[in-house]
Length: 153
Picture 1 (cartoon, one colour):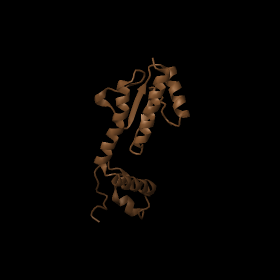
Picture 2 (cartoon, helix red, strand yellow):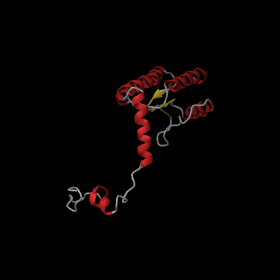
Picture 3 (spheres, helix red, strand yellow):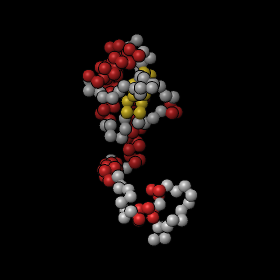
Picture 4 (cartoon, rainbow, N blue to C red):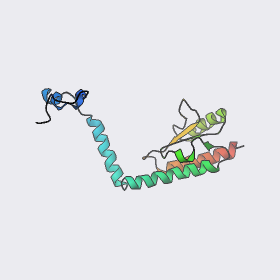
């Protein structure tokens, strides 16, 4: 009850004023129940996978497979310096826009989805978020290796 007051700091958003919610019979804002439900499912899934530390290690292993390939490739190259590399989004290019377009087209035909790079930077981008299985990253690297064998310089 002591939080239900008009005496709030200047600039306090309406949503953070408890009195607003009380005066509206808790109907001022409906909580995002679907979002909360999905978060609960994700948290349980993460816990079943061993928790955050286990997921971090798993994601580092997935990223290593892809970055190791890019680092040795004669056709593909990563576009981010090593110290700034992401474990979730791995952008890369061939250095030739037509070759990049061919790669995206052939990778899609091979069942590898959404590899086209961001519209502002082009190239390709592999998103390897938590739910991406290790097998998916390995399949991508196998496809990239085959593509390099067929079209490499």
